[in-house]
Image 1 (spheres, rainbow, N blue to C red):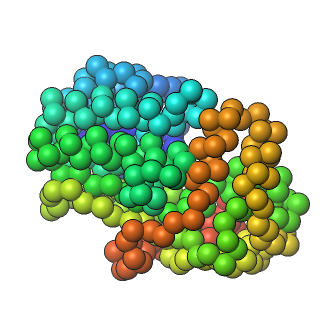
Image 2 (image 1 turned 90 degrees about the horizontal axis):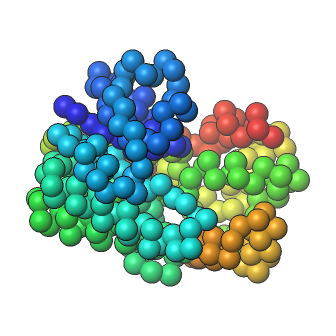
Length: 290
């Protein structure tokens, strides 16, 4: 079969590509910068170089594919990232109709089910709606992966963690599903390879456990050897820090909005639980970075 993968250098996409190659497939990679690929990968894949925001390119790059893994190429520097998400999804939806793509796996997020009020996650909700409409027209198998909080997000606050603080605007006692992107990739790759499912489906990816912020801080402390404590900050404090990092007001509000409290639509179950622990991820990835 021919399986197309977007963002093959991303936190999830890179793992999806490796898993497909290890399964004996030759994936077609949709990407803008082929020079960023591991040279050892070049002989194992086909490249379709272009911009996901170009509808004509997406239609051509997905012609003849049996399955597609789609990750929206976030760009928080744009004036309206949510509108960009919807416009980009329109190109994919047209490609689904034109090429009759049998299976599409979309990397979404918990909170997308709210359809509003969740910052940049609202853009993912718009994509879901666009793809749902295309699926209704084509009968494709469509899966929305509603992912939990990426462990890799911690790498964006190394200074704070080095100073011993795990900051959040959420209630410290609010449990969160923490997930390793590698586990998201495993779920995605399994669905891309399987022909045994149909219709519109939602699959949560919750990681191995829901952790409160003090529990997460304790796991990180043990794994890294750095004493880390959870601290709740106000949304205004978060805005100040984001502005200090040079982010635009659009980006600031989008990120703050994503920090709003919400409960995952799907309860934790055998199907939504994945194995990689926060402590294990931190030993491998966060400890060397600190």
